[in-house]
Image 1 (cartoon, rainbow, N blue to C red):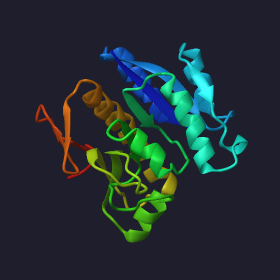
Image 2 (tube, one colour):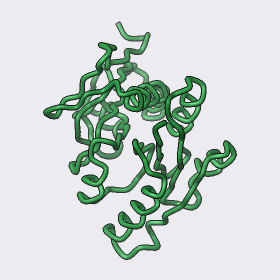
Image 3 (spheres, one colour):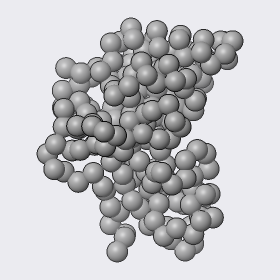
Length: 213
């Protein structure tokens, strides 16, 4: 049984999708803890209501990024994680923290990386005039929004889209993509070598929205 720890900063909708899939699909895993860097993060209350262990490591209580990351790692490691999931965790992590969890930390980013890293991804996509957008699950490396890609989901960009409409479409895809990738990890169905990830069953690592074509 693998232990999953989830980090979040806000409402935690991707956390919810992972928690629900883990239970409904009977993964060989348990959600060991949900940890936030903000005491007012909405996702904490939902996780606690599900009977999950929760904790807050407030970044504002620490003098610098290194001190915060050390405190965060100490809390995470109490739960002996096999997999660490970033689910809307809005902090830039130090290289030392990333190295500590190398090969067992995943992030989901609301763009088709390497396109549009950082913030305001949907604004960037609309400004660029792309015809498709999406989300990426990747292993975390010290470079922000970079790392071996586990899976991607593609959605159409429609002529009348604004940021909110595109964000909603991408988020719906994220809720399918992240649980799929996390399940592959805990079931040992991923191989990472030379910066590339292979799905060992031969399943597609690309999800397509039905509206494309």
